[in-house]
Image (cartoon, rainbow, N blue to C red; front, side, top):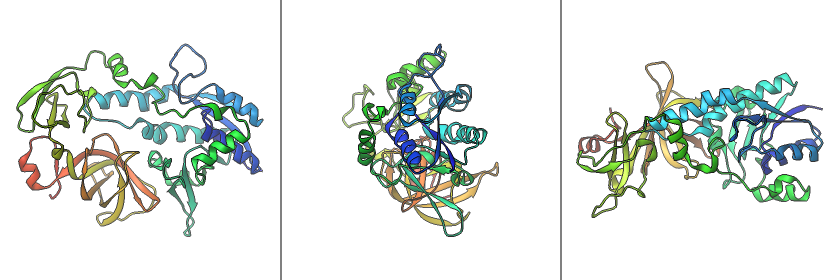
Length: 376
């Protein structure tokens, strides 16, 4: 009987993952990482992502359960960079960073300490054994709930130990299983908020964390003409239209954030489109050629559909791999700090952090905002 550590949040997906593995004959041990609590005085976490109801689920399933404190590493690796990125005019993706640097590495360490061969989570994704003996990451069967995008940062050697028990199920079937077994988690709504920001109000959170470094500044067009004032770079994102408080004959959007001059650059929607992007800190989950063009589909946001693109990998000055992606059709609001994940069909190949959009030489001559030339 194989022993498996199941990462449990108290939500329906991780609860059903533990249930399925128990019924398949695994010796299941539940664990919840105590990453953040809204009330820092509590010994156990309280946030919308990981509730204390998880213990009730473990009791219902008759499995042991552990709370493990990893709040110090979480703050250093996720929360502090989240604040720093916003202050630098970038829009970070803290959940992907947490999975890559904290959640999965820490859980695998705990699995080792508890003698568990496998680690399981409630993510809607799949891992398949390939003919050459390696393991590959695929989208979940329920494409509307697929979470593979958030898992691009897993390492190839980690895949052989990880299980995604709910990845072959439609989400409705997961709810039905939870209700049929009267699991406490079947009554809990899904949380969409960041675990360290109460009620999802990231602006108020940043105000409390920035120590007075958020400064108002000028709102300008591509030519540098001052059109108004902004309240601080962290409060704006690429593609934003609401809340600009500008008077103009045409609709204006945030098209770039210039941290060096503390300026928000605005323009018509046509200026939001990019021909491609450069991504850094690239992680590969499949062997890919370097210096060659490869057809892929790329997701620029979790909720965005994948779009056709050409991928070219190359080493940067530090010896790390960077990715150049050229879209088959220009894409809207390519945002530095967000994640670009590339697939072939349902197979996730890898991903990286968007450094900058790319444009043609003609576009580059016409604008002054940051844009990397597409052909160079």
